[in-house]
Length: 163
Image (cartoon, rainbow, N blue to C red):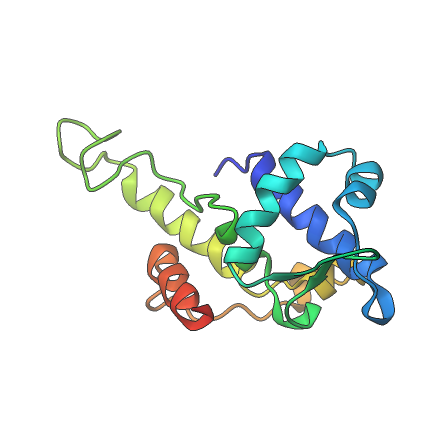
C-alpha cells in the first residue's frame, strides 16, 4: 500500500486540531499549515473532503476555524484516509482487469488482497485520540474480525451514515 500526502496530511491535520482545539476553540488552517508545514491551499482541499466526510465542522467569522465533528476516540485513521479519498488498496487491479494479467488475477493477487484487508483492519481501530496520546501499540490493539472487511463497502456505509 502506498500512502500519499493526502492521507498523511489529513491525519496530521486531524491530530493537530485535537491537540490545539481545546475548550471548543476552533483551529485555523493557517495555524495548522504553520505547525505541520503543509501548504494552506492543500489544506483547503483536504478540509473540503474532511468536512464532506463529516469528520470536521467549520466555525465562521472572527475566531473561526475547524473543530473535530466527533470525539477523537470515535474517529479512526481509516475514516480520515477514506474521507480524503485515499484508496486503501494493495492490489493493482480494478474489476479484475486493469493491472491484472489479460483480465485474469495474477498469481499473487490473494496475498496482496489479504495484506490490504489486514492494513485496513489496523487503520480501522486506531483512533485520532490514540495517536495523540501515543498509544498506538500493536500488542494492545484488538483488530475487528476479518469477515466482510471490504474497505470500499465500509466506506460507502460510513458515508451513508453521515448523510
